[in-house]
Image (cartoon, helix red, strand yellow):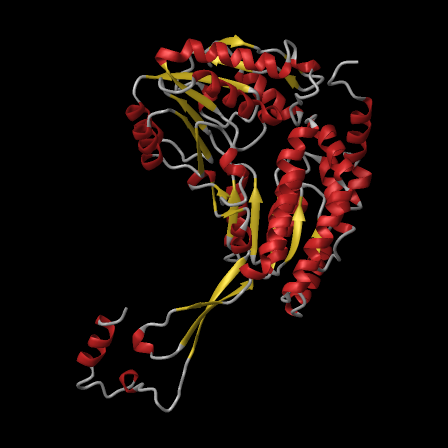
Length: 492
């Protein structure tokens, strides 16, 4: 039996796409309003403010998430054929690590912060009080649906909010599992999962939230932000872009190729921090391509369609788009791969050489297993070129030259950067994850998740003791300016 023909897959996909089943889960405008009214009422009751309550909810989520591991692994296989190792790395393991980290640190994050008070305010007390924003709406993309829902959600819970979450309808099996976890963990007036179509999402976006958190494409991100603007709702946008890898002539070429191939083909290239295209110094291009071929075969075999570690493209629309990019007439020379099978939504690992900046494949995010290779002569010139482009979600630079590393880090902008490897900056709970410019706004992961869903309320508590001299604060001001200036200038 071939790897990408799966009777169980087709049966479950038919079930998930069955309109009769979905209709019962799609909420109309009145039902949406009633849901949000109940969540708003619950938030305003103050039930979520207690930190011990939040910790108890996180513990419940942790316990249920562990129980659902087999269903999560199966759902991911159904939707995109991803292997269990990658699912554990970027979804199961990551969510559990985030939950453990949040549970361990929440009491410290939620504490009031006492800060200094300016000298001219005497002995007043200054405090920054973390408080929840209110009711939040979290929308995920399809490629890592469990992480993109539960990663932000645990931050929303930790900060004391209520939440509505919406998995992408492009990964229906994952959406069903997410919905089941939510329903078996929380009451709907606290956390609710919505399954449905674009029209239902648009109806939800008509309502007022206190934060919208969206993971997906820049095109849809603009729609989300436009909807949020009607209510002056803040947005966190985790988008994508054309993430470049740059390999100069001082790099360990074999190690660079190995790392880039892994990143390029992780989840069959369907990941926002994947290497989109590679710039290689002209003197090492042939060597880089040969090493890339070597590792594509070593990782997935001569025929990747038979590999248990290689998945398929999420849907027919994206499959057809990617096949269109494998065109030797407009997108360079195909030097490896290029095979596809529409029925299985399979595209083999593919390398395109002699690609130019004006090629169609360089005008959009690839989001698939196709790797264009471009050459450069000067890192300085390449940095200047990168400045003219939209800021990517990630940038990867392979070089042993510290001065060049500093040049790239200082004079390029990206959501995050890894030097001499790929994607690992996005896998640390100690580093915030997010984009900049066209690749997004705001960030999360670790303490940043708590901060994203929190308003830090500044407070000053006046000390009106009898010994305090507050005469400078009131008219008449004659003769007081010099005294005030002296206090401010001599302050620490």
